[in-house]
Length: 99
Ligand code: SF4
Image 1 (cartoon, rainbow, N blue to C red):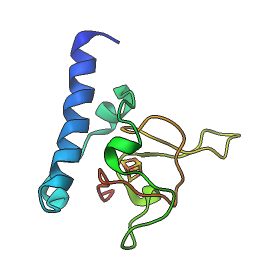
Image 2 (tube, helix red, strand yellow):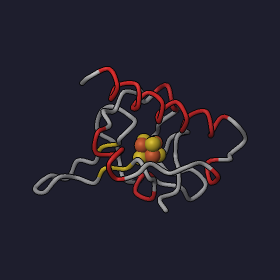
Image 3 (cartoon, helix red, strand yellow):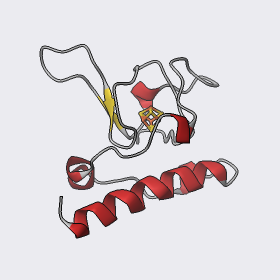
Image 4 (cartoon, helix red, strand yellow):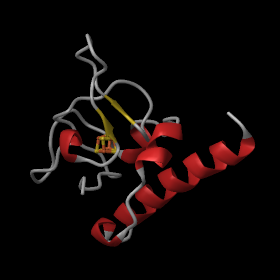
């Protein structure tokens, strides 16, 4: 990954986490474009965003803008921000409603 792409990924991830920490104002945040999502490499640890395999307040990974559904032939979901496999029924502090 070149330096520019890495900076973009870190910027988007940091923004998402900061919004959550800032009193739940994620709804007002700019959503990533499909092109931005395509170039992102998950870099946040599950621990850093409080990821868990269960929903919170009706919010689930499957309804999050950062969610990556399983590839064809797979049942494993991923995230554009958080590294490693996740559950579609999970949740973390970087959750942002898919628009
Ligand atoms: S809620 Fe789930 S899909 Fe959304 S950022 Fe967190 S781990 Fe990723």
